[in-house]
Image (cartoon, rainbow, N blue to C red; front, side, top):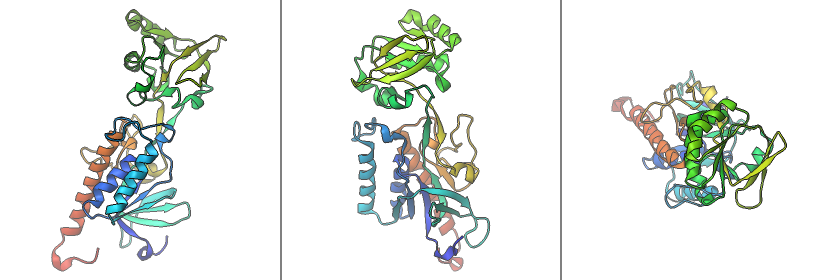
Length: 329
């Protein structure tokens, strides 16, 4: 480790430059706290054509949002920096003058020190291994019909891929009901799960939904709208207007593990209400990495509240000492 006196020190290290990280940064600079936002340029919504449900930014390019938010912050505030780097390590110092503080390293071994950390790096989708799924992802297969379904309203049909985390009757029914708002014909694909298909057919068949238990061999995207061909292992195929499926996700990067924060059974970082502090004191989380509700508006809220937790802790550490014992911070 380089001499600690030569390493820049910030009130907060924000790992992730998406919606949550930007929200955290904006809240921190409003109270004159210093922060650095680390962004390696990879975001979960990179393939999405537009944002949704974010006021004034609905149906606009996610990258434009990030660029505009960053420009807005830098045009007015001077206590935040943006580092477009890939981090590889974070740890909490156990000795020395900065004991209890945090240090991050990028891939070139440059270092930054921070009193607190906000984990806003998000998640990555673990796509099913069905042939063609990745090519259809975000084009004809959507993770959320609130964000992507409106544009497919009036489709001749829609599908629910009830596998992995969605391979329950509750999940299949929820997604099928959402799809039914957009099309008159909804099929639930169970990909070989006969038991689930039978339950769907029994419970939802009388309501006009169809269960399809045949295993899917491959998916082929059409050039028209979101349509795709669903090819089954028995050699038959059918056309569907769109498919909804919520893939499992994984926390992006090694940082949660390196810091030793506790995870939930669902796979996101465990947080404490209301400021989203993790089980490691001084480490907060904002956005998808700390919530099962992985949407932009939630990321804004979590970012602001995580920043609020940082502000309170840093303020208490800085200003609770008797005046005659205060040294340069």
